[in-house]
Amino acid sequence: MLQLRDLPTPEVLEKFAQRYPEADVSAISSFLHLLRVATDLSIALDTCLSRHGLLQGRWWVLILLMREETLSSTPSVLAQKAGVSRATMTGLIDGLERDGLVERLYAGEDRRNISVRLTAAGQAKLDQVMPDYYSRLKQCMSGLDETGRQHLHEMLHLIVAGVPAMIQA
Amino acid sequence: MLQLRDLPTPEVLEKFAQRYPEADVSAISSFLHLLRVATDLSIALDTCLSRHGLLQGRWWVLILLMREETLSSTPSVLAQKAGVSRATMTGLIDGLERDGLVERLYAGEDRRNISVRLTAAGQAKLDQVMPDYYSRLKQCMSGLDETGRQHLHEMLHLIVAGVPAMIQA
DNA sequence: TTGACATAGTTAGCTGGCTAACTATAATGA
DNA sequence: TCATTATAGTTAGCCAGCTAACTATGTCAA
Image (cartoon, rainbow over all chains, first blue to last red; front, top):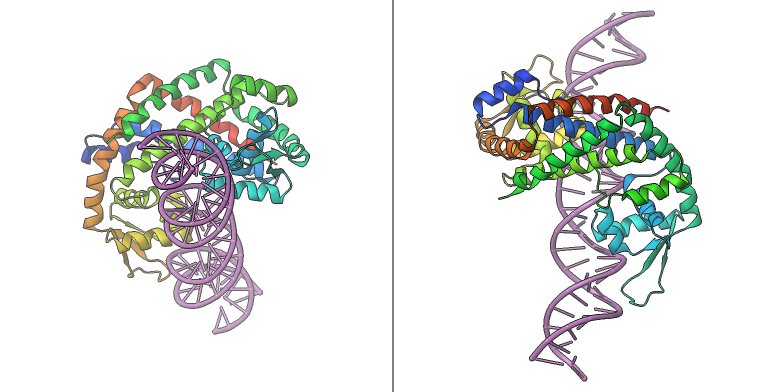
């Protein structure tokens, strides 16, 4: 996400703003700070999951399956929800199946679709990971009270509303 | 960073919280929302840079060099500041040098060190990219006023303070 | 002074994403 | 009805990170 470790100091920003009058130093600073913190959180999540021999990609697949009443779904739906390509999902399922955490079932009406189901071992793995993840996360976010969290949500909405403007041609 | 597109609804969170009492639903929700928005911002940044034929990694190297009075630095220092391994930095510099945006100079005191310098073409590239980047970013963050940005900073500090607790053994 | 250790840059090979192209199956419309 | 088009899953190959190992150079203490 944001690899950069050496965020610009106010002085550096000022220097750049002098050459580039378009620069809005507090906007830049907020943007980079947000990316920096989010990246650190993501790394922390990876660290937590790695203790259980998992990576984010596979872990999300397990969670998406657990959300389903039937504990199953199809690769293309999973790909959409997980935000990866179908090709990547094939690889994720391959790995999870090799570890016995999910299984492919070829039994559907439409023979283009296959079903991917969380196995008992997959559920057991989640029952081991999730309490650890949740309690660490609770600690991590404990600095922010309910009001602060509400505030954060609102700000994030405001920011995300600006993304189209950033992308447009 | 966060690939997941299908963030949990309050109902899903409630269901998980029932099975896993450690869950703090508002903490989880804030955490995921933060990662989701940051990821969207990072993708928007990539989109902006790609219009100029750049990727984040190389672009940050150019910026780090421009920050220096001498427009130059060494690969290992750049690697540290850019938050990538020295091996990766070798590759980034290779690419930038091939495009004529930086040059390697072998002239230092300590012959283990080499110097990497921003070329005129590199500076010209930045003069083309930065105004675009800055004005897009300004638009993107325009939903948040100065007070909001201050608030955001404070909250991010509170969150980042919790990261060690999330990582610790 | 020289042997052990540390540091800088590079190379080789791994990984988890990606796109594009392929196969098989289903749906649709002339 | 059958040719076209769309969809699902997979495969092949690309890319930008990574670690580990290697070479060359510098440092330091016995």
